[in-house]
Length: 308
Image (cartoon, rainbow, N blue to C red; front, side):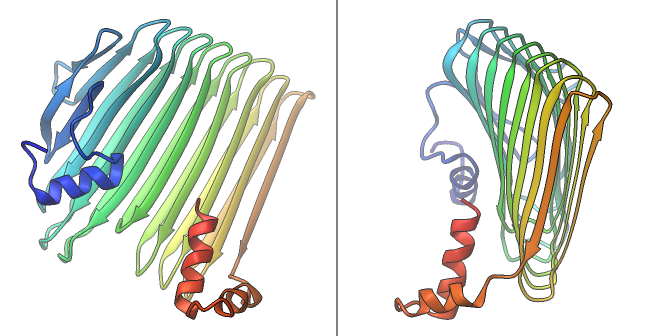
């Protein structure tokens, strides 16, 4: 790809699967500045006047179009806060592929805090995919703090698929959502920590309209001395349905806390929470080892399948 060096190309491939610049709408941010941008007839990307981020305007009725918007940091010591607002027009159906990759080969920490606000119009449908990835052998930390704020209007639908692949030293992930009548929010979070890494995830969903619904699922693996916290709060303020679930595997001396919370403020609110933390069963390892895998390979296979 033109304009990007080998490290940046590797980051782009890891977080959004780029092998070349896409043909649709995209916004690529590299080392604190816009590196490349393209709008389309139906998806307009407008930089904010104060330089703090961008506004994405998706026209009503837009169907089967996508937007790519990766952020990459390949220089140590960069710290930035970016605000991106997504205005999803009524009756649209789009996919947004985002992500942040940090390569740190220096001693100073690199940090990206991305605040994404979604305004999902009536009957609109959006799939939002976000990956986080860190690389580099420098002593500086790789820090990512994504915050997602969602407002879904009547009968709107949003699906979030978020993943922390590897190499992120510290992350605080916050998601806050408000759902109108008939609105739906579905979340699948997958993350893995190792070494002394820390990951905290916080979800709060307020279902204010009749027949609103949400399903939040987190699957995680914590290795070595790492620490994870999962906290979810689902609030039903009308006839609605909600489910939150945390499944986690713990390996070595890692620590995991799960705090699911549900609040029903209406007699017709149907809410469920689940949480399970445990280690890999020994018989699973033994079974795979009988097929010729080493213990380490067997463990990796189990983890890979769990996080899919």
